[in-house]
Image 1 (spheres, one colour):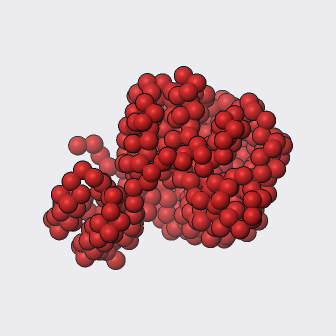
Image 2 (cartoon, rainbow, N blue to C red):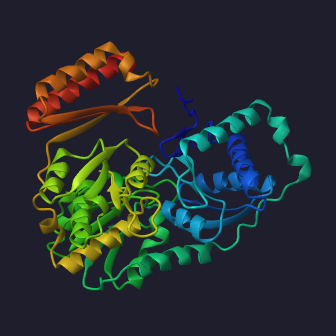
Image 3 (cartoon, rainbow, N blue to C red):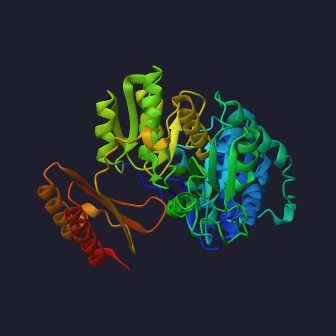
Length: 458
């Protein structure tokens, strides 16, 4: 059995800023351990570091950068930038790694550290485990990493604006259609997108109105962004036809959700359907295949099948979607949550800004509004319920939970799905039930959630 990682989840290391593993000492040691990993293979290694708008992001970035610099890594800062922006810079600027300080959609009190290798891909689980081992070794003997006597200076972190502009320029150059006629409401979630989205959209002549672009360190994702797409939808619906489309990003803008001109929210499943059909029509959808996850709605699978497109399901987490895409040679994959990965170009991770541009490009070229592009997507009633847990005991070892799951699956008899799993980034169990009947969906979700609460809940 492979060894389980303790610090790295499905999207890097996350926790409450100031608490382990995100203390001032541990973030420095994480930087050192990562730096050792880099210089073992690239003696004169360089790394680029970027961050979101959380109050804690600056000091965590500084401490990680100090740890990297202490072992000889040359560190460059891109300042506030999206996660995919860091991935782009890592692979185009000859970096050994790209480091992002962000907790994505989590509350402002949380933060995280995620790492891309020099090719722009997220680190493999095996490499994360190796780095973890060194982090724990340093934690057991912190004196071995005490550089105070050396007075290692903090890195100068040059070039923030230049690095951001390079990323924005690359996105703008990816657009082939004129988007100037589109009227778009853009919710930047008071997060990383505030640093790039206004400049990008305006450079393309898009008639964009921006909301939640005033980060104060504590308002990231607060009642806005991809965590609350209904906020965007209500504004668009109340605008009386002022907007053709609404776009909303999460805190680090590696994903995007949308709403149509009537304010109806469109999640990643809808985007995958529109993008898959577009690529398929151009003969660019390799293997006529799309990779989604266990959370994607059955309605997407049915709609794709009608268009002659096969859907494969990967584990939840965009890195696992990408792994399946690379294995299958697929050009399109993504998650219901809005991570969409395009591999018909150089993309190596989900990019909310790129997804928004690609969807707008499809709308312009097709001459159809978003609602028409996905009008036949019949969504099975689906409910996702989160239960905060005190520990992540394997669910297969909790008989009452297994009994509730099996009862639901027998009752649904193939006309629905049950997915129960732990979050990879938070102390949560997630129960997802799909069914043709809303009553069945709610009843089975409640029954399974109740058993998890009794056995593992806080």
